[in-house]
Length: 258
Ligand SMILES: C[S@@+](CC[C@H](N)C(=O)[O-])C[C@H]1O[C@@H](n2cnc3c(N)ncnc32)[C@H](O)[C@@H]1O
Ligand SMILES: Nc1nc2[nH]cc(C(=O)O)c2c(=O)[nH]1
Ligand code: SF4
Ligand SMILES: [Mg+2]
Image 1: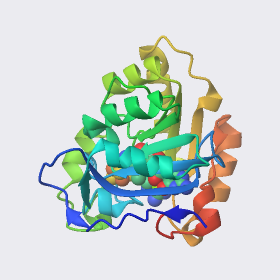
Image 2 (image 1 turned 90 degrees about the vertical axis):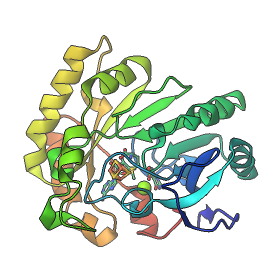
Image 3 (image 1 turned 45 degrees about the vertical axis):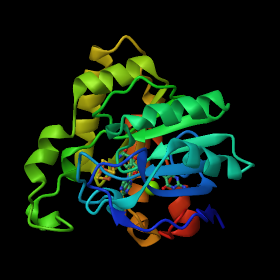
Image 4 (image 1 turned 60 degrees about the vertical axis):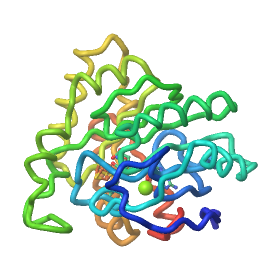
């Protein structure tokens, strides 16, 4: 079983600005998604997001951002306490809304860690990122009134306007080793994926290979994935893209700290 953070921080609203980074959780697990699936990794999850996907599996970093402000020293210390890990995954929420994420990544790189950043690709930061794991958001992520987990669609317009920023996305693809990891709800998502991949290829000098494009089934529980994974696997074969499992859900379902 992965080791969850043993530093008990009070869960507080993180809307108000503080010092350092608003941290929702730090835990040790296996990378569950993407090309590094299976690699033992320390996860640092920041709180706060500029989007509001209706399906967000990290509700307490987006719809209700909670956590504790922590200085970079204390985060680094906790990362080091997981002695087996060489890989760190910075995620959220959206980690790149926080300028302080740059300092955290610089310190991790200086300490020799491989860094993956899980990001929605709407904000560019210049930082030592070994793998930019970008998950651009499709129209099927938009919190319409019928799918809003909290209200009646108050975030619909803002989410729709901000979910793709081609400049930020292209710069990230040009500057970092990248995987484009799309959450797929059903076959109707695929035309948008092929279109976005084409636009990224036109806007960048980098080669984006078909196997840099990953299709990930939507679902935060095993039961939900039972309804999506087969169809998404078939779509990956049909389009020549890569399929990625959600290994952590297969192993631990939706248990906290995994
Ligand atoms: C919680 S997000 C945090 C990082 C960043 N905000 C983003 O969206 O990429 C981490 C990853 O989980 C994915 N994700 C969130 N909810 C999901 C769900 N219900 N099913 C499948 N993937 C999901 C996101 O697309 C992203 O790849
Ligand atoms: N095990 C595990 N792997 C993951 N890969 C990306 C995650 C994320 O929430 O960003 C995640 C996560 O929450 N758990
Ligand atoms: S962008 Fe990421 S953290 Fe933000 S709401 Fe969507 S899945 Fe959740
Ligand atoms: Mg997750």
